[in-house]
Image (cartoon, rainbow, N blue to C red; front, side, top):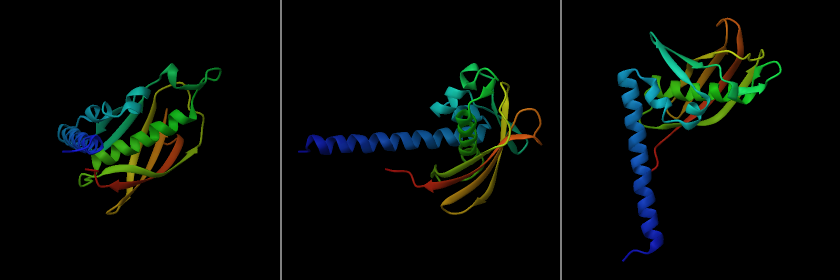
Length: 168
């Protein structure tokens, strides 16, 4: 006979296993169909701030649509710096999930550093990511965010992700 604690551990293990399988299937479906929306919808913060993604050839261009809820200073008006940073981090994560073979591993942020170069005005913001190096356990990503011209970024970021094996 199992104790209530042992039973709870068995149930949690099965739930975690189902969540990992569901995530893997979602990632594979998004890659195969070239439909990033499937994966974006699986990330609550990405949905909250309104992240969108358009594949352009081999590149992925992420878009943060103009939204009053993302303002930090309504008198300028300017986007909240945390929203810009969060958008860039989510873009890097999505880029890794959609563009790189992770061997079923879920990327986890180790380090994220943002350089804010210009104010983010109240308009659509775009981001493009580049995987600088992908090792067995670590992925390094560069992110550039802009609003009017790609050559005039409002922020740049460097991200390091750990490719952690799924918990069972």
